[in-house]
Image 1 (cartoon, rainbow, N blue to C red):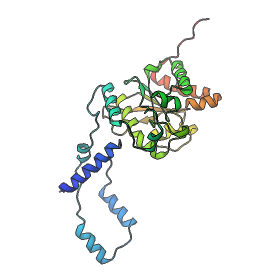
Image 2: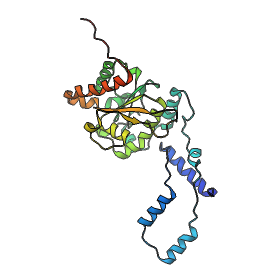
Image 3: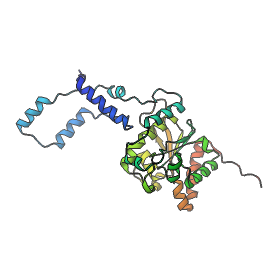
Image 4: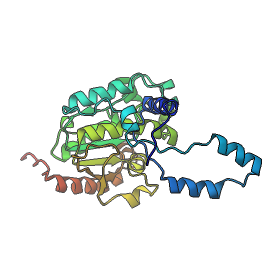
Length: 282
């Protein structure tokens, strides 16, 4: 029969989970006891009898209660049906974030913008100088190009939702570092879980690799849909299809790839049943 946690151990574990919650981490995974045993036997060196006896006197095997993590770390937006309210709760939970070093150079935290019930969501890498100044994603030159791409799909910027992997501008617009992405991406995943889009478009390699947890090149990732469902999503959300294309900033540097990006967007349009707007008669 499974034993319950010692009250002191339970309290310590609860505090630890709350600490992770403050970092924006809500999803936890337990390793099976057999796996732990195998790891222990293959990793640690044999101990002498005195050491083993000492360890035996203090080690008490316990079984973690299945619901301890749910009790300790409910998401603020859990059970909130209205996506507008749920996104506000996530933004409030994010607060004046200082969870990673990116906060040191920011002017504004860039959360996300658009339709909270959008069928189509775009995810970029991180804010640039214009976005940092205005507190809104994709408002600079790359943002203007993204607006044109959205318009070419027969949509308006207000119809979609736009966000980034990290919500603070990396110094000099450098690529976000892995630890920065790992710290910030749980909030993005919660946004996606609330919005419940039918399609997510990853703009550029950084967004694609972080969303898919794959280290393939952009060329290898493009041209197909991926099944995508963020961890912790409500069971009623079947997940989204995820497509990968070039970041608008890259297209500004190499306009020759605009045709390839349009192919990616046409794939998305076909799935969503969108028709491009007809050109005005001359």
